[in-house]
Length: 73
Image (cartoon, rainbow, N blue to C red; front, side):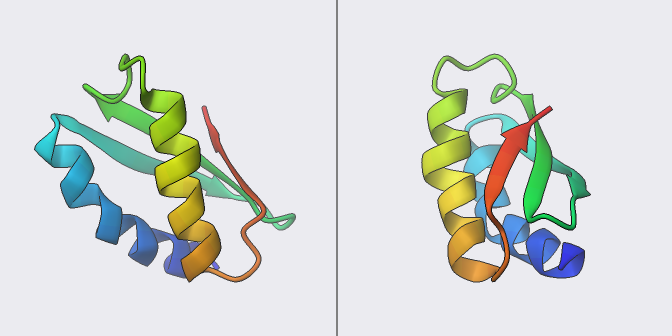
């Protein structure tokens, strides 16, 4: 599942990089929890939670069966 998550993150990465940020995959737990770290401009952005939940989490749930939630660490 980790490879599928990484491939899905590659699809959203250009959008984040266009705004001066990025996302780093930290871990994929067996229970379907994905842990990521938002870096660059995304790390301190007031909209980071929305980006995480409405952008990254929504994409991962759609693209990778078994993803239950995405957490920022």
